[in-house]
Length: 261
Image (cartoon, rainbow, N blue to C red; front, side, top):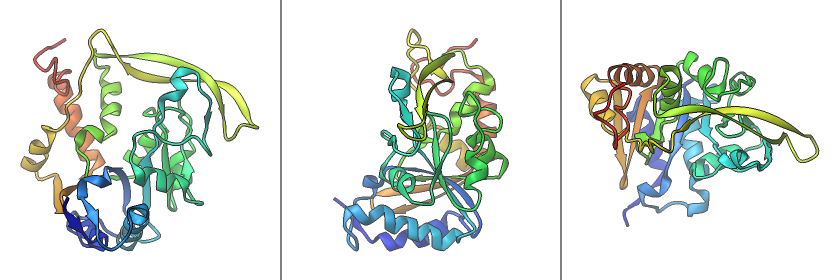
C-alpha cells in the first residue's frame, strides 16, 4: 500500500485553491490515500484538521456530513451522541470536537466547526435541503466542496438538486421517531426525506460530472499518496447538476440513464 506524509495535506489544500476564511464541506474516505508515515492512523484525522486549519485559518468554517438513517427505522436520534454512519472517520472526528455544532435534521445532518457554525446549524426545515437548512446556508455563503479520497457519488448537494427538480425516481416520505439533544430531552418528531423509489431502484453515478467540471474549468484537483483531492465551489456544482438534470432527469441514474419524463 502506498505511503505518504500527512503534513503534505497542507500544500495540497493550497494547490486546490483553498484560502483563509473559506467555508468548506468535506466528504472523506481517508484510506484511499494509503498509509501515513508520520502519524498513526488513529491520529490522521487530527493531523488533517490541523493542516486544513492552517490554510483556512480560525476564521474559516469546516462542515462534514453526519448522516444516519436509523431514524427511518424508528430508532431515536440524539444530536449530541448519535454517531454518523458510513460518512468517514474525518466526519466523526469533527462531530466529536468540543466546539462542534450539529444541524437539526435527524437523517441528513452535518457537523460544523468555525465562526459560522451556529448560523449554519440553526435552521430546522422538514427537509435537510430545504430553505434555511444547513445545506441552503452553505450554498448562500459560497461554500466549497472538498472531496478527500472519495468520488462524486459522495457529494451530498446532488440531493438538493434532485429535490428542487422533483426527479421522478424519488418521492417525499415522512418519518417519525423519538428525537432530542440527549435521552433526557426526547419527544416524537417528524421529518421528511426525498427517498429513492425502490420500484425504479435508481443507482446513482455522479462521476461523469468530473469531465464536465474540468472542461468548464470549475474543478481543482491534485493527488496525495494513492488518493485524490477535488475542490469545487458548491454553487458551480449545484448549477451544473441542475442544468444536467433539467436536460435529462435520469442523467445521474446509471440504470435508467436514457429515460426521460
